Image 1: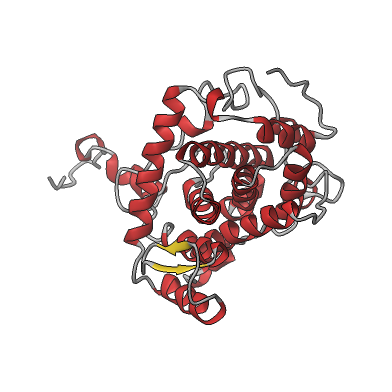
Image 2 (image 1 turned 90 degrees about the horizontal axis):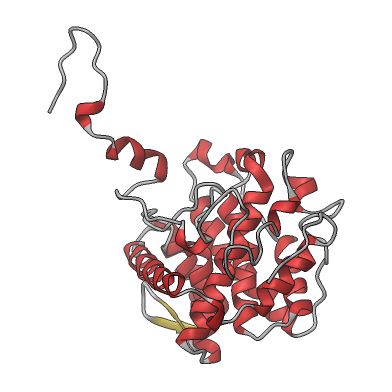
Length: 312
C-alpha cells in the first residue's frame, strides 16, 4: 500500500489506512511482539491493585456502573460494562509504570490501547486475531499522533492522555468493524475529548492514572458512538481549530501518514526503521523512564570528583 503525503486530509488518510488493516497484513514478528506487550501490560495492570487512584475509580465504577457485565475489571475480577472496565484497567496499568513506552512520541501505548481493546473484545466476543489486529491499529494511531504533535505538546500535555484517547478509539473502532468513514468519526470524537495536563506534578496529584483511565474509556466511547452514527470532526488533527493548532507549537501533521505502507502494515514515519509495535519497550526497573535510565547506568561508569569516595 502506498499513500500520498499531504497535510490536507491527513486524518482521513490515516483513518482509511487503519480501517483497512487486517491480521493477514501483519508480519509474524509484529504479532509476536504484540503478544509480549500484552502480557507485559497485564502484569502492570495487576500490579496496580490497591493503589489509591485505582481504588477510587473502582468505587466510582461500583456506584455508577452495572452490577455485572461482559467485561472484567482485572484487579478485582468484577464484571461490568466495557466502559467501566476500560476506565479502571487503564488506571491500574499506569501505577507502577512498567508499561511500555515509545520514545519519539513520548507515549505509553499499552496502558490506553489494551484496556479499551480488551473490554470491547470481551463484549463483542472477538477472536484473538481480531484483538491483536485492533491493538496494532491502536499502537499505530497513538505513536503517529504523538509524534506529529511534537515535543512542545509534551511540555504541557500528557501525551499518553491526549494521543492515547485516539489510540483507544482506533483500536475499539477496528474491533467493531469500522469502515474508513466510521473510523474517521471515531478519531474526531476522540480528539475533541483528548486531555491531560502536567500541572498535577506540582501537587503530586493522582491525575496521571486518571489520564490513562479516561483516555481508554473516552476512546471506547468515541468508537461505540461512531458506530451508532455520531459524527465527529473530520480534520481533528490538522484542522484550523484541531489538536495540532491548539495543543502544539511545532506540530507536523504530515508525520501522521508518512511511510504508510513503506515498511509494512505497521510502518512509522521514515525517521524510524521499525514498526511502532516493535519499538515500545518496557522499562528495566520498577519506576518511570527517566529514573530507569539513571538506575540502569553501571555504577562504575559514573564519574567521581577528585578525592571523592565511590560506593560499590
